[in-house]
Length: 416
Image (cartoon, rainbow, N blue to C red; front, side, top):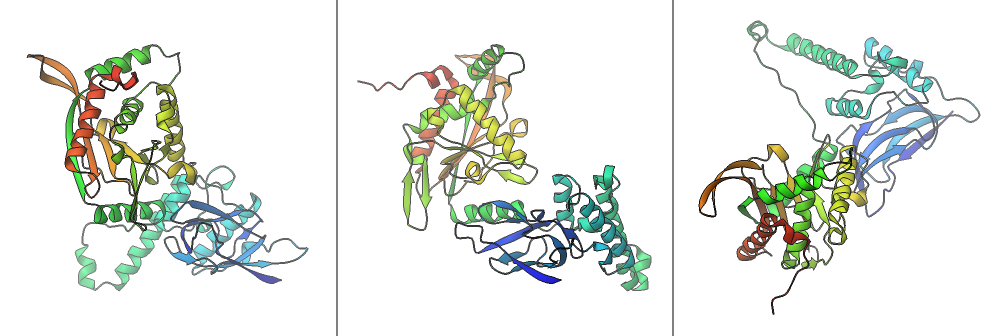
């Protein structure tokens, strides 16, 4: 027998450390070569790290949320040559109960190729709750851990903690039985990265907000007409691809808003291509997949690419290349859009456009009261580089295209 120390690998692009998101093994567990043992996250991407060897886990470094430097010990294996990995039955634990559960789970993992069987969602729930999956006995088919198992493990952990606190509390406090419960959720992984970037953007960028009301009655009529021509089963058009195309046309006249600010060099990088970030809510938090080269796409192509990248983001399958490189961002809360919002700029961009809820209400139209479909655009600009006048002029230009959507598809004509 010998020990094999596996160090945090160099994940490239200047990475000096990585954050532990979730462990998929534990001390005492048997693993096979290439089995996923841990999920880590850098400022660039989330990475699943496989085991370089097969054997028994002796120790691991760091809990979810901890950052480990590249080159520092990550996990220690006990390996042998010409012999199978040591079974995990001898794994020790703080209590007899957890020892039994750990051995059971580890044995189950070994019998199913080394990896404890459960869904990605349950792995995330376990990481957020601080539950070691190796200590959970699965009740699903083949020993698979299901959500009810996690709930039971969480309840048992809470009961043990409550019991310990009760034993330590003064008699008067125990008798009082103070009402109310709290739970602590460690901010790690994607959620931590989102929090850091949002804080940095809000702290460093002087936001200028501008909200405008848009009559999208004609845009809705066009959308309904286009959807009526789709073959059965084809996805319907939403407002988003139409807004993206209108934004592309608008930026032809306002290139100063299709810009990235390179703070390290003090340089504004103006782009001819329009790479539109689409703010997307996912189970892991807000992500911004990118529709690249929207200026070269048709409406159908924009719609298809928007669906593709947002669906991949929600399924946690988006690559790093699909999540970086946007030059301007569009965000929409759909039916939850409210009347107005103040979106936070997706640095290093200088502008973001927010779509609010579309509603029908009476307005004065051509001198008479009529029911029209109205939607507000809520935008934010980096006031260091986009003047208020230019920001307002840009939104007014976008408004004109959305209120007269045929203009979106007509080539720009310069006045003589």
